Amino acid sequence: IPLLLSFPGIELMHKWKKEYGAIYTYWLGPYPIVTVNEINLVQRMFVQNGDNYADRSPLGSLSEKYR
Image: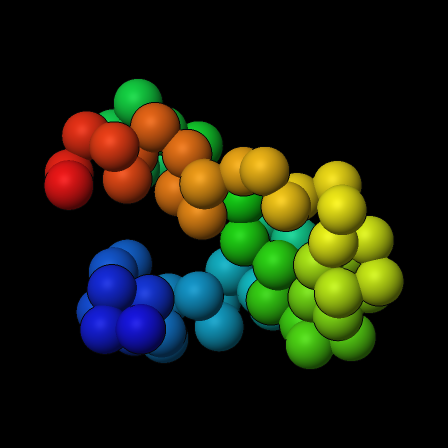
């Protein structure tokens, strides 16, 4: 959770939500980070349709690089 609250910053994520909507992508170096920034969408995407995401690493190859 500290990573989510400090990078790129919770205030910036609120700004991006207002500007781009509840789902947006930003780049962390060469890695695209898709952010879902609304609890009802998170629940629908990851709880109700969790099988679609069950085999994915939370940060994909990014987590492998920084382990």
